[in-house]
Amino acid sequence: MKKYLKQIFHKNREIRHCISSRKRAIRWTTIANKFGISENTIRWENNLDSDTLTIGQSLDILPVTGISYKVQSGDTIYSIAKKYNTNAQKIADFPFNEFAG
Image (cartoon, rainbow, N blue to C red; front, side):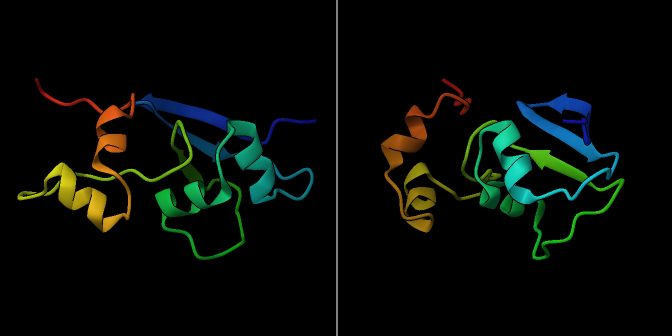
């Protein structure tokens, strides 16, 4: 299989890749499988509605399936958990979080 993604940089455990060649059809499933995450994770992180990928398009790839969230003023771990219908302890225990302590 020919490589169709090129790593551009690594920042805060997030990887940015650029689609660099289109020798064959590029599918979301192929990209998601390459990184071991869900297709929706790629779509959510990159705010994508379309199924179309283009040469030169950059994609931010999270290290795991899920979402990234930038904490806003007034947020608490409990309000974030409620917003995303999850348990606050799961957020606190997630290894990529960097809580000041």
